[in-house]
Image (cartoon, rainbow, N blue to C red):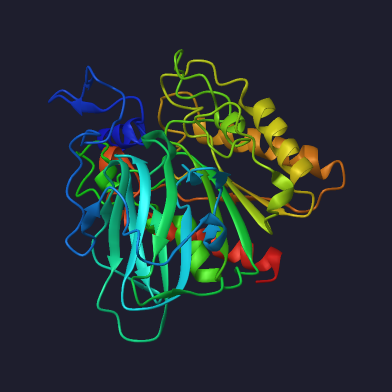
Length: 401
């Protein structure tokens, strides 16, 4: 395999190491290897012009409503302050009559949001300021009823968001909630699923909140294709048992997956409250990172995670995806792809031995230069679409969709 391909596979999914390649091909790690937002809490970019900041709080003389009147998608915790959430792709839906719409959020100041009005994405993204702020999401709408959807595009490591209140203007009216989609998917993953760098111009850019966009991920594409509600549980750099061999970041995805708010160890998700029809598990890339020198615990850790998934989701079909960034050629001599596949198959066989026929392996093709790259060798928009296509057939066949 060419040197370029080897370097692709080394850097792919580099949550902890943002590297540069010298002329001789040697990998040199940057001093600061922890991804962070490219803007600080105090200096968030101005919201896009179509989403102006109106102040610290929304107008008190407009009709307001509490968290009980908003439709939420994804893992959300109801608190006295409002609806609090952190996972990628969490969305809030509103049905209203009026010409404008305002929303008040309390954010860490590092997250970005997409807005859809009547099913059409509004150009640009909302960049939240730190703390309580009121934003206008729509104005000068045609008379009548409208639907608005606000979606968090950035991942949990960038802090929590709380929906506080919203209003439809002085002459507006909040209407009854729409029924939720009948179909449900949960997608569990890492930076691939979180759409790390998907809006980046090339593999040479590094992590930024601006270039992460969950709405362009394979998970979101699947949701739109099937008309399904999708709950995403994804965090860059996380593995089934190892987070790229880190000795400081030691909490793997199976532990975080148990939580509504992943940064809080006392936040526990109620699995009985939301049962998916299908679950996609796209983990393993970070377990087989070059920095992790002992990959042997992977198979048993994966088996335990699948068993736990089956325990809380007794009727769901489980789709175990083999990463598009794992290769047998890199690191040399480790046969990472084959070893990961064998570990996943062993876990699947363990469930099948107990009579479980609703667990499946889906193998993603390796990403190539022809598909282009997002930041730090992450999947491009083209690759994300291709991953969704690879999952569409198995999901449709086994769920009858």
